[in-house]
Image (cartoon, rainbow, N blue to C red; front, side, top):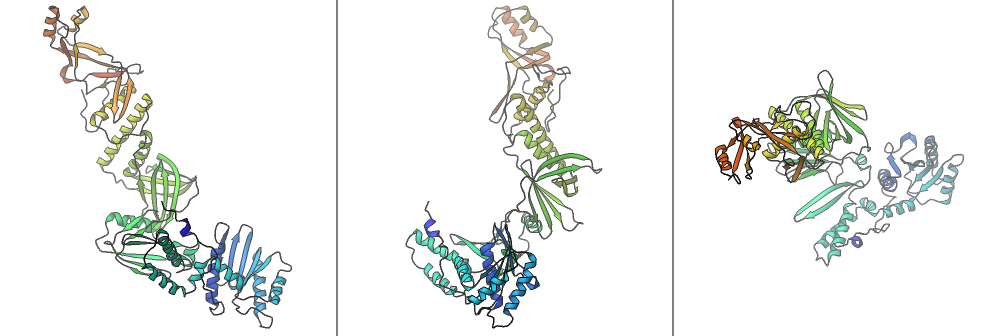
Length: 578
């Protein structure tokens, strides 16, 4: 990585070689320059600058600065040759402005004048403070020059001779580059030149290949108030798809903070109104805007509740407010609920229904959390009453239409059943991991079987339709009874019952595998081998009658009902095993 610290260092206070001709610019331009300078000097974390009524009026304030220690008032007087006593009316005007300003109880009152004061003029200002708890100060021509020296780009903004320097810089761009530092220095100087185009706005820029990207940036917090910018867009007929149109409606219409890009094939013309350096029409361009999410205080609680037609609450989900916004069509509220994003768009027109947009991702969530997220989607698709509160205060309500198809709702219900099954099995096995969102048919059936076994149910296990054994050759009455020509009842307890779900193994513990109507295949051959003393190695198969499956129940799980009553699996699309 190449360090750019040396090349990008700004030499604060360095002069640009240009000066403002204060005695020639006139009152309006003087006010404009001083207001811009005061914004740069005082607006920020420790002060808030406001130009009052443009030129002050009868309130005695041209510019005010609200600070932690109190109000500071600036009075602008365009007296290039000062205010000597011999010039009638000037000192009276200053006295009247001071007297009016004292009604606001400022901690400091500052006269701004583009002249170098004489001793007599300074004594006049000193006397103004007599009898008042206020500091009287002056920002005269030397102070103004020094102030602009601290902000050379601002000074260059108002000094058009810099255009000739910009042209020379452009010619220099055609020259050979000596090294990386030379490139960085030229880019930095070009950026400084861009910062002088306007007192409130500038362009940041980036070059990738033949593509140059410009990003408009405010030079101070009050830029949008001092020099507002508006944008209107004309799209090409038939080139704006529904998805892009909806995104534009959300961001421009309701202030939803999301990035939107309009490609050149969809953008016919972009019209920008505002300062001269940016105003105009743009064609054949890609338009991308990245709204800034409005800041909201941390820890603001939010809740969405679902209600019946009789206003009975059927579900409540709590979260936190993440952003609020406003656009041409209405306002928006964004809530984080269980880590998902719920956007509510409220039109200014009360006859237009509110809309809710729900963005969620189930990846990486444990089953209980995934179920909570999915239940909101289920409620939204089912429709009905919705009520949103922010810190206990109603923020919006309405009735949503039922938009979910039967297939959509059936799929969600089966996913909720899957998450519920996995949650029960994970807690039983004390094995916790994010819920896999893909699984095989066998994995899903085994997970359902495992949940029912844990709950003390008896199930038909579709993957056990027969059991094969190999005889060890030992003969006994119990073995002979097994080979009688009738159905048999057999129960087997393996040491453990383990299911798989993706890469995860879940061991439920010992289960009983049984059936009460079993037939032995190969009975005659096995009996003949036993009679001949050759039973060792003989294989037999136990198979339930009528194509049924073996039954399962979990050992040691209490159950109020007999475990022999088979519980259906109730999985969508699965024929119940017999």
